[in-house]
Image (spheres, rainbow, N blue to C red):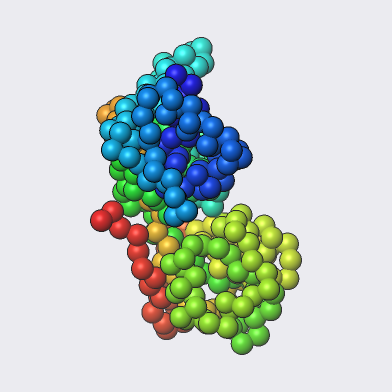
Length: 309
């Protein structure tokens, strides 16, 4: 069976929409429809009920879904097994959102290979939808995400509570004289909390959906924006960024997402190494949070948190 048909089926099932599946798989809607039709013809049963509201699994589609996941898992296991480079005996694929990879992903990869030299490690980076799809498909076995999606076969655990702080590329910035504010997309929880705390910043004429990667933009321009405290320390030390001292800060949690069928020893290795990496990142963050607390007497703004419930 064409594994592409299985991937397409699972994407439509997860999104409940042929249109959303088209956008995530970067193909045309007619290609999505053709693939599903081919799969239905092969199985001899209709798998989705189509309507203007989207696509809902039929009873046969619901029965087929766990088998589709198993087929995809077996395929990815086989593909990864035969691609282990010479000189290595094990393999692990990890992933992270763009904003989490520079500060945590590279260190995690280094820690994994230092602890287990015979381990071949592959890294993937992308937006949450892409990394989640890779987790479901078995392309990656563990990942770091700010906005995890609960899917069958995945386990979500807390990783690091980031602190988003307002920084500017010029000194002596305050909320009263703030210039060049750039709205960085940190998700709906942050957007809502910002609108409550600082409604005048919601009308920024500049916005970036790049998370921590927006730091390079802000550093090299007359600009300001909310960035993770742990990521900006070097730029603060170099006086390329400055804290806007009278601004509130926002808690922003990240999460570890694991495939529940990952080998027990690799799962333990991944948890142990990531825990050490997160601990080091927390130390960098505590330094700045303590400094902020000393500079201003205010309470952090707490947006609603993601939970596993």
